[in-house]
Amino acid sequence: MGSLEADLRHRLQSAFTAVAGDGADAALRRSKVADYQADGALALGGRLGRVPRRIAEEVVAAADLTPPLPPRRGGGPGLHQSDDR
Image (cartoon, rainbow, N blue to C red; front, top):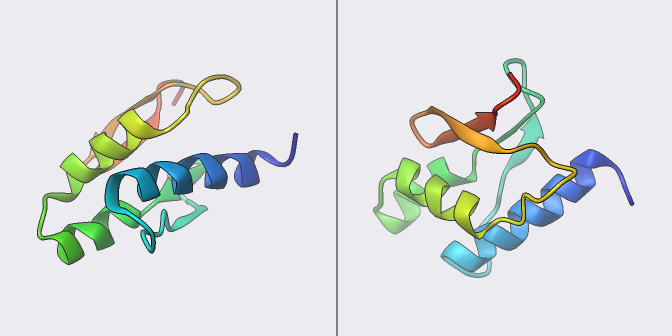
């Protein structure tokens, strides 16, 4: 298995593509307030004219977040965080 970041990037990118089609970017990055942060739902909200939180919920539902990744929970408008934080 590759790095956690590469694994997470692949899983989220697949989910963003499933929700919004090709060209949707997960915009995954390291974060000061969490291990990783995916800001793609914010950009897609403007592009698709939809609420970013709803897009984020669809992405989380479409993402393969089975172990070794921890479960996700909402962390604010359009955001999801690990339950272990």
